[in-house]
Length: 204
Image 1 (tube, rainbow, N blue to C red):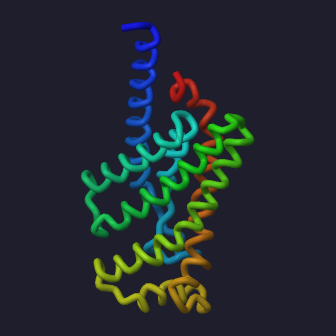
Image 2: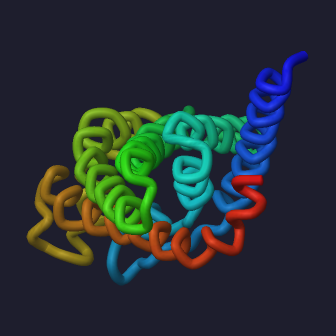
Image 3: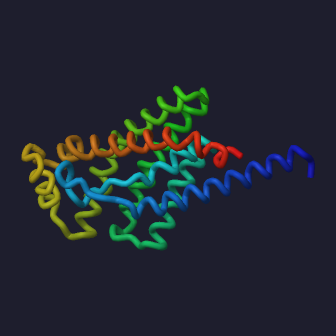
């Protein structure tokens, strides 16, 4: 094996190892969630499991961010089980992939702290916007079927916080978009806090 081939193989092995490690961390973080009942209905919970896929997108590339997002949801569905017929895991995968790919592409075009920040913020914003059609056309209609809960009852949970949220689209725009954006920005802030200390592991 030539030195070039050996180096490529070593790099591939390293990426696989890092992606596996980050996927495991993301899987564990999916268990660490809590509701914010005064701001959003309690069935929607806050977690930071998108953080490892953001780290992967920066350190390894946007495709690896998607890999981490996929693996964490597959692990969660297999080891924890699903309560939503995999609709929740699908939503998490779609939105997490948008976050990671957007951040990773913008960062790898410039590879600077500024491009990382711009990419991560753009990813959080796009994830929040994409959450509207994903939830409106896929997630909430599926929840009505899976849980047998009328859409009016779901909307009623939002109205108990803000009476003006009288239809699903208003609920998503008034509550889910800001919530998803803040969730993404929290991941961005944590990423910038820990990326440099973790850099030797992520890039070695």
